[in-house]
Length: 84
Image (tube, rainbow, N blue to C red; front, side):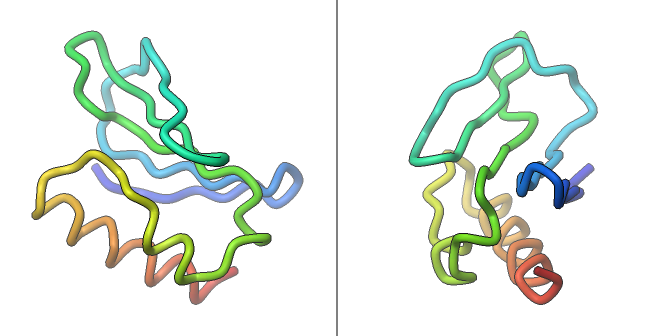
């Protein structure tokens, strides 16, 4: 499942990559947090202060994914940047 939600009150986007519950989080950059499941598989990505970032900044966030997942995520980012 790949899905993006956005909370305008807190200006936070969350990208769901899996239905697995997160048990650990790691900050990978300024305002970017990766959530992992019990097997240390990436299950979600939280992006803080979304509207303060340019679409290019959002697309260029370096997230630890394989090539296919990165391609799909970039497509989601492109759609998301059209909305904000």
